[in-house]
Length: 295
Image (cartoon, rainbow, N blue to C red; front, side, top):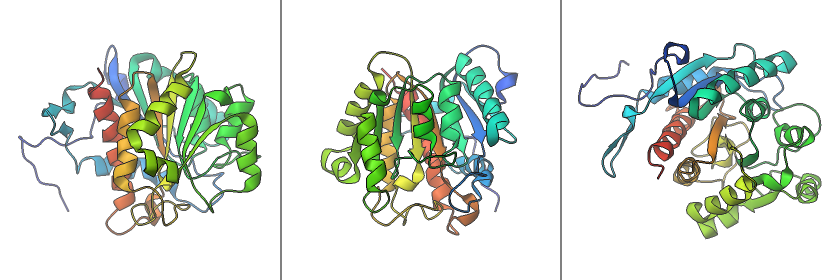
């Protein structure tokens, strides 16, 4: 069904190509449709296009103010055609580095969580915050291993914070591995007890210690399965949609956040109302909102 047109109600999305803009931009969107090493069957490679389409259902406007986020310079650098494997990861690094050189914030649409590895390296992240039900510390190369791979390649684990780690979704062995690395882990219960603002304040301070940029990994399977049925690994009892959105906006409000990815959404397995893809699109806009309201 075609969306209505109203000149007084501009829509998000349909942003100009990155290569067509001169000078610096505020936010650059890139697509990283990784999927080949996923531990669960997935159609995550279809998700970047689906999220771009869903963005048009929303406006780039905040009611507190009100604030027109559409006034920011936003660009779309397109997709890495084949982001899996060593060559594909090299292309992701190159595109992320190019976007980072001219952008205040780089936002990547996955794809599965393996995308985080090359993205964080491409923008030169010094700290990492994950919103994820899982540790992603598995051996090998998969969507379950990006955090371990980053650590083995030199990312300081003392500057990693993992928010939303869930019971019954991990193993004792990987919990011990996280502890041995010195990763700061904030479980689901702590998020609910403390609230998004307090948790994210701590995460930004830990990940930001020592300077350099921070990367935010938004694995949507941290959410309750009722709001994220299109995430293969989402479980009942995860974060509410509003909790995820509050955490994302709080992170993006800090100038130390220089990049983010939105991953683990399988657009081909979503509910008929496309609620998971729409939540992913709203995460893009929450990142934009945080960026647009930085002090």
